[in-house]
Length: 388
Ligand SMILES: Nc1nc2c(ncn2[C@@H]2O[C@H](COP(=O)(O)OP(=O)(O)OP(=O)(O)O)[C@@H](O)[C@H]2O)c(=O)[nH]1
Image (tube, rainbow, N blue to C red):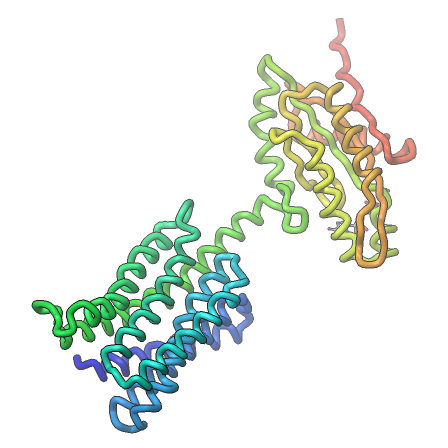
């Protein structure tokens, strides 16, 4: 295959990818990084197409240089940017755009100097550099990352270095070296571009899918609003402590708390303000707990706190600390400072407890606290003594 055909394959491949991504995004997938990646592929398709048309004599050669290469640089810079965006670095534009402008100016200066070697050197370094930036973005998730991510980092790093190595050969050995000569290297480099196109495209989509699956798995056990375990997550955390309660050893306690008059807050300030208050007050609760304690959302504005190795009396003190902290912390919403209180039920886990009996007892205590006037704590009554 000659270089011109390879360039056409790159143009068509990127065109097909950008069309598929465009229609995928049209169907409702609206992640910011995906739209950046789509524009990146469109620019790459445009750049390669211009290079192909000028190589085939359809367009004048200078057009390829003045427009084709800058569009291609933009495409690869945006591809790296999409990966930085996906790695939670939204400020990549501040670095990438000045670098891109500098690269284009540098390339055009090489064109004006009219030295082909210099131009090849510049384009290889610029494209290889932007691809290496994409690799660096992928590598930020190396620790704890999947096999797919690690494979992409290694493979794309190798291919990016191959692209950049063309510059080295031009610089160090203008006549080539052994079989890696000026005829062979462009073939190798365009092969590297082709593989980078495939790996980048498939990799980006597979990594996006991997992220979505991880997020779905997380949301099975975590409450999306408050970022603490949901009912399922809390019950999972509770299970081993329920089992331990049947064995001799330090006790485990449970606090159930409900924010008071939350409906009134929603009605007065709106549901979004209610959400803000809820998030802030859950953070207030977390600040009063040890790392080994676990707060989770049971339902609505009712939460439970699991306190391992804590007796009922100590749990009562913890509940009062949380109660006082909530009362003392007004939360700023869009329109006002909102103060709230909470009511609490406290109990210790018992050897014969099931989750049903445990939560029933804690909830009865909570209802008593509310009936007694809210913003207070009630402790579950001790177990009845067995008949003599
Ligand atoms: N903003 C917001 N409101 C919620 C959320 N979950 C539940 N709520 C609201 O919290 C309110 C809870 O109301 P209730 O439990 O009936 O009672 P209350 O108004 O808190 O009054 P008492 O419990 O008697 O003190 C309801 O209006 C729910 O709509 C949420 O995630 N965000």
